[in-house]
Image (cartoon, rainbow, N blue to C red; front, side):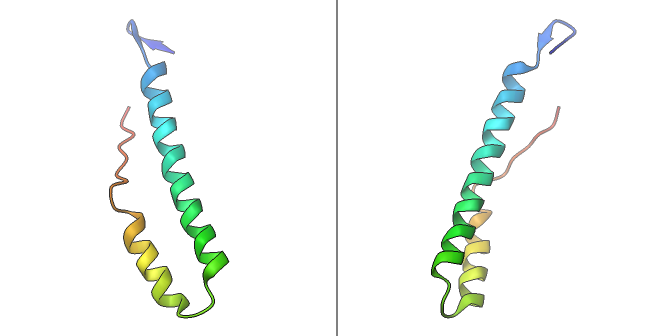
Length: 62
């Protein structure tokens, strides 16, 4: 897609890649919780949620 002579393909692909990576990380954390959550589930969920957002800020401004 081109707007005013500027291609938006590369930025769109970069945003999709970043979003996919973020979702993969979150899915992995959820999988780990579901596979290993036998005791103290609430504490594990809270710890995982606290760590999940670190360093994953994503700005999709177009």
